[in-house]
Image (cartoon, rainbow, N blue to C red; front, side, top):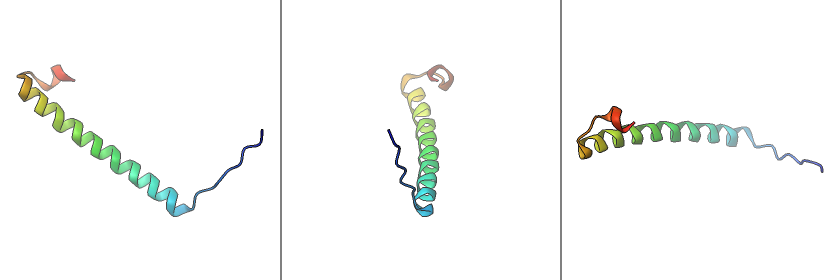
Length: 50
């Protein structure tokens, strides 16, 4: 079996890396807000939820 590579243009690869970094930061922000909100709603500490 022969593998065929389709190289990405440098701009496309850079855009994918930047988009991945933004998604990681956004995910961490959402989790931080959700843990605080869940802690208040369940009347427990954030460490108990984590």
